[in-house]
Length: 263
Image (cartoon, rainbow, N blue to C red; front, side, top):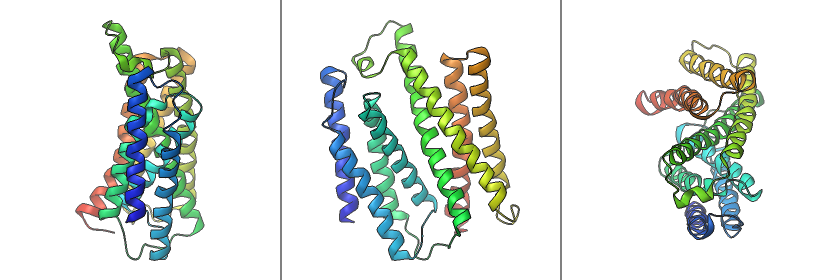
């Protein structure tokens, strides 16, 4: 519990430093947040490793998976922010990761997680990486929409200084979607190859929604390449595809594990 509390405090500290930097000069050149953010990420991962060691296996149930997605988002945010692009993303991601970690600590531990062979573990880790990457893309889409809306109304808020130029943010959005799409494709392929008894495992709805999300993200990338889609169109497609993905994974897990109690 101590490690979890320290990690949460570090996440919130990193977010606070970013808020102060954004208010001061738009967050450009800020580096003080990197140390607490990196330490929080390390302790977040360590908390899961220690829990898995005590339980005798990797726990990938609802709250554990939610926390791991938060960990992945924080890692991506730290990488992108350290490169000098979109450090302000941590203002949203770090508190969110802290909340997910706290939920995992309070409600997420399973005493005897079901053992998974390496093939299913590969599928699960691919899925978590894809969800984390595309969740960051969804946040980029929201920021792009807010930036476009503010500029259209000529409302030059101070927080706009924390965002890169519109074209750069849009480029970053599509690069992130492209990486997430590759990971999601690998997730679906490993699922087809390694997951057996699809009907018996109540995974049909999850698979259908995941495929629909994959088609939506793929359609968006195709539209960007072929027709130059951007702006509001890109935002709508991104958020719709992400909503399908959330329903596919966490929606199904919520119903099966927390409502129907099929752990």
